[in-house]
View (cartoon, each protein chain N blue to C red):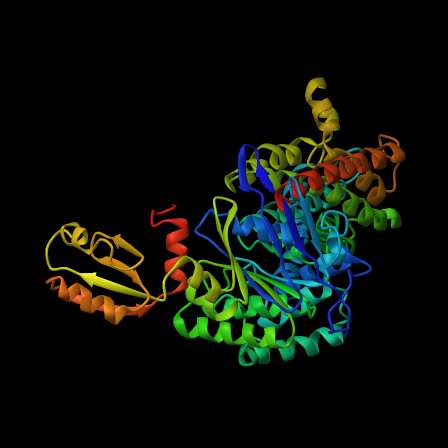
Length: 272
Length: 297
């Protein structure tokens, strides 16, 4: 077969379009323009959630736990866990239906792939947006809980990048999953069988040590536990249970592995 | 050539599109038109064969080629939550177009497709015709040298179709190369300088609309309807009249050079059809002749 669409440069030599220098940022820009329409609702819930947490757990549940956990009040102990689990919820929420829709319903990715963007740019741009969502949500969380005195160390600011890393570490494989499934009912399954169990057993609400040995190992495998341990050490100002570098490498491995698989699946969907 | 597993969607086509030309791919559903367009759009590597676009290799130079293409896909993939203008300005960013230039160009293009008044409304409530025009405007945001249009007017009402045609014609006058697919014959006759008819992944005919009609059909067509149940009974008596006689369940078509003379001959045979229509042969006759009357899907 020979298909030749061979055009010599045309006479229209005005602004010669070229691929953008930072293509992923052009993709991020698109998502931010969409965010501008919804941010008010987002900001409201970003502040409301930590506020309700402080009231509900600090005043309500905390009252039943006199001795606290590891010698700190329950609220202070719980907040870093909720920082990590909120980052998880936001990241996976943004990596499920929006990704599915960009393939299936509004088909944004197809529009983007017709422009001079590579599959990796499209993926990276959307991941950057998820990172933005996680960081802004967690910044609000830190602000509110800080005002209520639930952060016990200036190291608490380190919880922000940790939350961002966790967000990317879970969003990347979730992108791959959302791009691969054929129906959106699979997305709800992810919450039922991954997000909720992870949130319950990865040391957010109670120490992993109170689990039986076998379940404890399941908690250690989840990316969430590693972020919980880091966040807790940051806001309480104590040493983490595991090496910091080890935690970061483990989360980094989820991000890298997830991104590689996601790029593969995206390419299979977009370049056919 | 394009294969998907065992299925060969595009099987050996040989086409050259020249700068400034309006080139059409015609064919029934499943003929391989969209697969061809996706290959030319550099989002679908050919399984075999050679494909050059703007002198470049689509597999290696995809982004560089796509920077100079405009693509109007078969199904609109606008963002319904963004405004009309934002759909253009965000898309312009993908081409590295600076913010200020993007805003200017969006305003120009919205004028061009007559959507300036809706610039700040969301896309969601727009009519199908408006969305299509916006998709076309978006395909022009990078001032492309080639615009690929996959069934640009499918599903539009006649007013919207004529508006789209008129805009596309203006683009062509500006020297933009148009490559389009369609299964509307009037669209092909309106827009295309040259076209190929595809069927089953192959090219079955190539040429200008006029040349194709001359080659594959006659100058005129006479449509005869007989009152009786079966048109066949009468058809036998018409054998030898004109170049070709085609019997359909509801009418008989005579492909002839001179329609009025043929009608006189029919009457000379003592036949009195209930209804007689003499018309010029169209691309539709060519299309049906080449790709058959059977429903494809």
